[in-house]
Length: 387
Figure 1 (cartoon, rainbow, N blue to C red):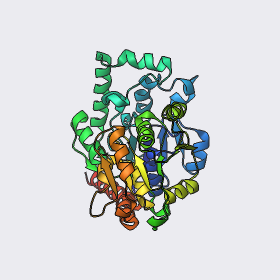
Figure 2: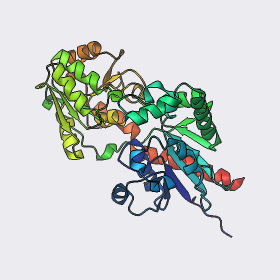
Figure 3: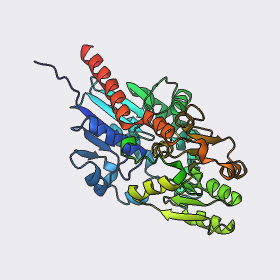
C-alpha cells in the first residue's frame, strides 16, 4: 500500500473564544493544514463560525457543564482530564498551542506524535505576576489563594511539568520562553517565532506627517502596564491615546482623573483594524510597557506599520525591537513612570526610519512562520515513517 506523503493533523488550543495571539497561531496552522480537526476545552460558536467555518471543532465536556461561563477559573482542576480524554486515534501529528492546559493531551496511539508549541509555561503556576489577584471575583481570588504557596500548588506544578515533558517535541515562541521552559520543565527547545500578518498591515513611510501624540494598543489591564503609560504621559504632559478595552478600564479612567490628565489621555475603546492602522499612521510612537512579555505581537505590528516602539527592556520585545542597525525603537530600563516620562518627553521621531521598522518586522512574518513550522512537522512525520 502506498504511504501517505502528508500527515493527518489535529490542532489543540487552550480555548477558542476571542482573537488573540494563540488564536492567530491556530489560524496560520489551519492555512498549513486546512483539513485539520480542531480540539479545545471551550469555544464560542460565533467565533468559530467567523474564523474556522470549514473545520471540524471538537470541544471538551467542560463546554457543557452548568454555569461554565461563570466558573471558568474555578474549573481549572478539570482541564487536564478534559484534554486527556481526547483520543486522536486517526491522526499522525497532534499540535498543541498552549500557555495553559492544551499540553495535557496524550494521544492514545504510540505512533501519533505530539508537538507542543509553547506560548509560555502557565504564569498562574510559575510566575507571581500571572497569579490571581484581588481584581478577580471574590470567589476566584479565595479559590486561588487556597492553593498559592502550598503543597497543592507544588502538585499542580509537578503535573504541568510532567505534561510538558510527555510531549514528543517542544517548540518555544521566543528565547524568553525558551529560558522559562528550561528553568521550569528542564527541557531544551527550538524557537519558532509566532506569526505576524505583516503583509496585511499598511506601511506608512512618511514620518514627517506624524502628529505629536503617543499610542497604546492592547488590553486595558495593569499587568499590561497601561497604568504606567498613563502616569508617564501625564507626568511629561504629552498626549496619549489608548486603543483597547479590558476589565480595569474604569480604574484607568479614575487614574486619569486623579492625575488631572483628562484632556491629555483619551480612551478610544476597541476599534476595527482599519481605524487601528489609521491611528498607527499618525502617532509619534507606540508605547509597549509590558513586563516580561512572551513575544509581543503588538510591538511587531507597530514596526510593520513603520512606527517606532518604546518598550520596557525585558522579555520577548528585546528580541523583536532593535536599538541599532536598524534602529526601530527605544527601551526604558526600569518599570517606573519617571524614566518612561523622560523618554516620551525627549522622543525624537527623526531618529527612526520607517523602512527600517518595516524591514525588522518582516523577520516575524506569518509566511516565515508557516515555512519553518511546516518544515519542522515534515521532519517529524518523515522520521516517524522511517522508524
